[in-house]
Image (cartoon, rainbow, N blue to C red; front, side, top):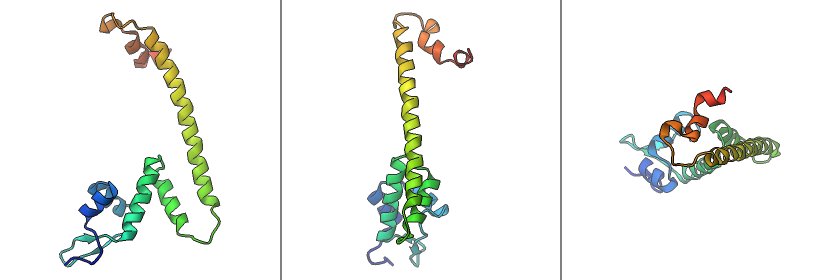
Amino acid sequence: MKFQGCLSIGELSKSTGIKVVTIRYYEQIRLLPVPARTEGNYRMYKDEHVARLRFIRRCRDLGFTLDEVRDLLQLSEQGGKQCAGIDRIAEKHLNEINQKIADLRKLAGELRRINRSCSGTGAVEDCRILQALSPAAGRG
């Protein structure tokens, strides 16, 4: 029995670009509401599931943690309230992104410095890049 206007888990996966195993996981951790089932025990998803999964995917693509996504979803269900909680989550995430950008800039500079020290013509055992990346180099 097919529910009118509903999607199977495979169709939901194709529609959202989220793997079936991930959809099941999101159900298990209660990020995604458990769908109705057919008489044959197949999951049948509605438009609300599609919208929620697309929201989760967008958040994950932007680097939000599953806990942050959960908080955003809970806050989104409080229609008439102030959005201060959402602002706090976004600001915290922005600060984390800015820290990562700073770390990546430092890393890029270090890799440029290391790369300049290697002519690319020596033996692998003498490679300055490998020496600089080895755990012993970081303890100096």
